[in-house]
Length: 256
Image 1: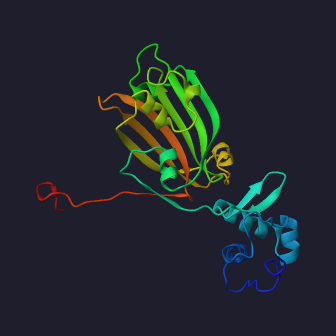
Image 2: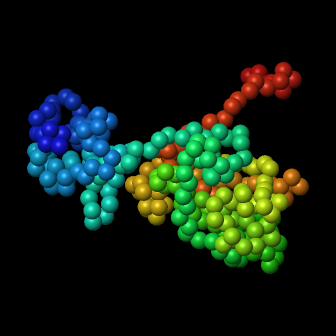
Image 3: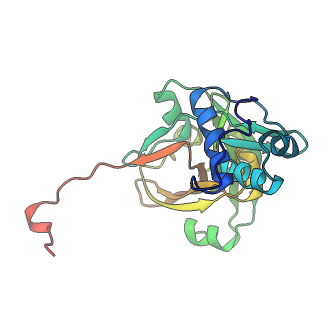
């Protein structure tokens, strides 16, 4: 630890800003294993005293590493090396649940429920689910984790007629729907970039403002009826989404 924060080696003449030099030194220590997940860093004032740098410089280096997901700050506890998260590749061509995805990888799945409720629908739920006057929606909101690491926040809305008892969903939503003969067979899914707000970042155990993936899914029964409207937030450092592309048939190609 003393070697990492030694005052030796900082160069003001041509090696870039001092905060970037400190940021690189800490990052390299994490990559080499000299700093391990869960290790605590000294307070900023102590790092400043050890390195001979200003507290402003130290703070900029630490915040850059927090934003990049390498460090984690816990209010009242300090700054820690963040847990390593295995990057997961998720195919976009299959309509599966989080539970099924993790089971195929041989990983355990945990859920922390935020809400399981029955309520009057919001306007966007009315539009997405094709609800009528007087219809109600089931809302399921939970943090999905695998092997103890929180990976995603799921916020699902379903018509009451599809799933009358929200408390009956314990594990896989799709398994609960399958039991009722209501499992969707196709979906339209949209993915966009997002910076996580303070509340969602805390649920996913990452720093506010880090990159995430916002996924909106509308799922359909064989009849074409909408059965699910889900808005999820995934950790950007944990997921890669992959899709297979094929050359279009000759008659469908457009040459530009």
